[in-house]
Image (tube, rainbow over all chains, first blue to last red; front, side, top):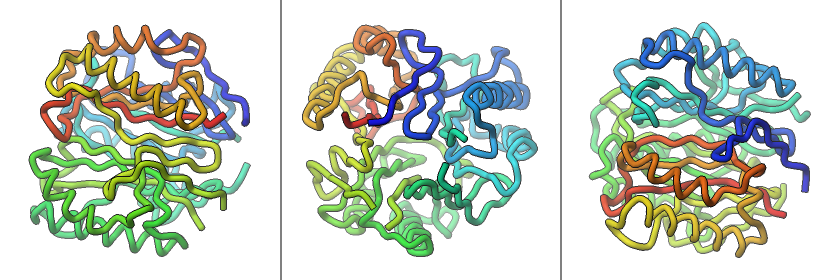
Length: 117
Length: 117
Length: 117
């Protein structure tokens, strides 16, 4: 089998796991508790960009994204930020649904898988 | 790396992404807003059949399915349609849970991954 | 294409699907309906250990886990059991969110993907 590369584990989960050319990310949230969905989405996507870059890839190489919103009524607010961020012609598959997250401070969380270049 | 093949992107997500022999589908919903779960499940699975066929595969090659129901009380109604559709001996792994979806018009949404033949 | 190996299908889903070195598990729940989250998490993880072993792998080879809690207020109770179970240095990526499950008897469900050794 190919090597499994785990980074930034905290005893509960790893930030990333890479296996056989695919990079898995844990669910990512923003930096500012209780900020608006717009701000938390921007922070989440900036953190995703940072993690992808640290692993030698970028947002043009995302395969799949799962978006969790604590309140589905905020979907348009999230999508506005998402649509400005995603690279046209390189859209991943995606699903977006409502789930309360591990803290009420977080209104949006995104989990994704990407290809390592 | 193998080529990433994205189809039917809309600036937000792609309908499918294919990479290294695996086909990822975005979350699929039915055609008829506010129809029953039975009808929407039939429509969703018909659309999945169509997408799989358009990508050179079929429901016997599904690896994994995630089923979202806006109201978990409708799980038996969804399962009745699912069970009639899934090919015995070729069942994917599956999870089914409750999440409100991006519009209240949609009562069921299914996301899956399949092998390209 | 590599062979798809499906085990313990029940006409609705398979317990596991193996493809190209990756093992997919269906969502796993505990044994005891309406037991505490602590007990159900222990039962779920024991069942996961059993399934991984039956497929020639173990918890050091998990890539990705998705944890569903019927009540997110129980996250600390689940994490206490999870943290004692996960192998330090081998943490998968993970997301945890709230979703009602197919029966109110189940308070926690875990779906994951692992590498076959």
